[in-house]
Length: 156
Length: 156
Length: 156
Image 1 (cartoon, each protein chain N blue to C red):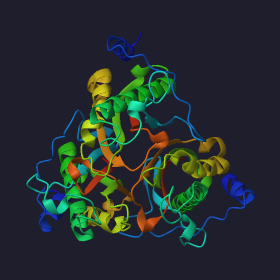
Image 2: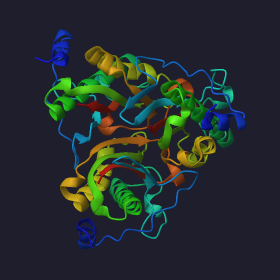
Image 3: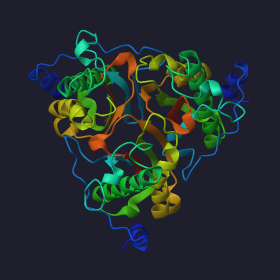
Image 4: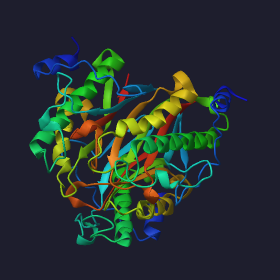
């Protein structure tokens, strides 16, 4: 078991079967040393969307539940990275996370929600997990998910 | 006529004159082998915004019209790629599409709308068109367009 | 003093101390020749958010104030680039700006707002500042900021 997978095990995280794209696209694309992961929504380990992670943060979804949803997105990002690379130790760097929070127009705490994803990536990848990030609150996400996260990695 | 242009002709698609940026930026930028295309809105082949593609999907714009708008965005992306590359056969891969759907806050079918863009890219580029993708619903787009699509290609 | 810093001085712009990320991420990441800058909000040179740049453009924030906010975001992007590179003359090209405007759902003038950022980048970097760009109006931004701008540069 590699370094990253060992860390995942230590953290008690089992990567789910990566979600199939819901349409005519692919979950990841490799361009040279850049691995681009499609936006991942907050499906749980069972591949289902929990009611707690459905709706807008600041309205039906609490900031705490939103943060948990962002963590699930990041786990799903890693599941796709594993499908792409075979071995997660090929990740040299998480270059960027893009965080999209389905937000009530009056909710301004989107960074705190996105921390659920950032914290997970840093917990799992350590120094290699230190990423640039953009977080915005959006009007609507696929299937009324509370959070969607996309990623770019540099890989060996 | 190249492979990609032949396919466009088979599909009955004529690339429009690429739209000039509405401000102080450029429609594309090449960095090494990565071609980045600015967000393209859903102008038709005549360079105009149809009333059917103006407004929010889930409100004034039907999902079907939104999907058609996304297709127009993708055609405009290809028109910019041709302006950038001269020969569309230089495209090795569509790495990523970013889809922004002007969405009523209650509309959750944004992936279905974005399929209009993804389907077009795969229809034209085949295996080389298989892209990673992120789709979100946003509060407002330029000129009240229903859809905006940006792209990253790997090129030879 | 380098070419870019000289230009900044001519324009009367002092780069602020770059803002520390508000969470578990970093303000920039370098992947090969690509420098990715995290989304920067419209803090002023004093590191504070002016009331004029707080809220939604088209509602509490005028388009003119929004454009000024976008300019501040671009200045903050350059401050991060300087922190990343040491010497801003290492910038070969601003490849892409991503502009997120906190927008009233009825506001369609987001490109004009984002021009505040594009104009600044071109004024400072000249030909090397000519960038691809995507601008969208979003439902909510961190700390109720009116504008957030992310960037990708090609560097030497």
